[in-house]
Amino acid sequence: MARKTSRWDAAETLETKEDIAAYLDAVLEDGDPDLLKAALGDIARAKGMTEIAQAAGLGRANLYKALSPDGNPEFATVARVLKALGLRLSVAA
Image (tube, rainbow, N blue to C red):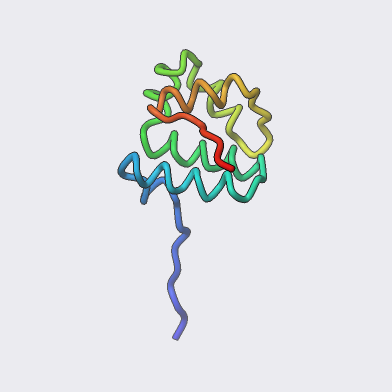
């Protein structure tokens, strides 16, 4: 009997700020910028790409492009998206 599987989408599991913070914390621990870009895309989709783009002062298409696998968002874009999400980066020793 063949098993049925479905693609897992992180955006479907990110419901609270705590969920989002834990997800980003794990991603930042890895240190891979492509993983961070993908995670921000997951979070923006979970919260609504249009709403996040507006809150960040970006066009929706520009945000999709920046967070796409081929995108290369500037740090300013990352900072604006985090602010739009009500989050901030912090550093710990």
